[in-house]
Image (tube, rainbow, N blue to C red):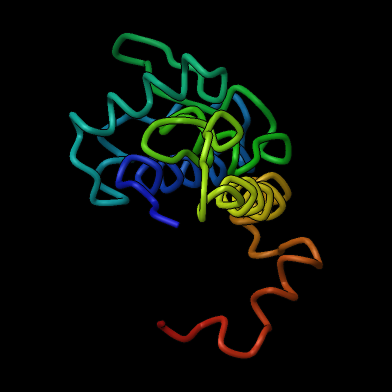
Length: 155
């Protein structure tokens, strides 16, 4: 799986907002503070936060007292929600959804592989919330994947 810089930066920004939400759900955090805390280029961050606002994950307020905050409870925002908001569908092949592909000949069953890959990604990313990541607590099936032999080895 390729994780884009946009998705990585978006998650990091949302985790800053999750920590702020824990202390005060109404508190606004300046874009510059998020940028500085996570070493995210401010212009790139602003575009990411705009997309997250359009997706209903982040709320923003302009002005001297403005900033950003989560627009939903962090327990209700899955990693899949974030990836979809920033990058589109979880799995695509050359910009197409796997179920829309049509292979023939020796490749006729490849579509099922891509659909299964998407299902596996959903299985993990839809079950982990911002609150889970922030607290370092994961659903049992995700913890089991992390504990598998070789899970942390490069291949």
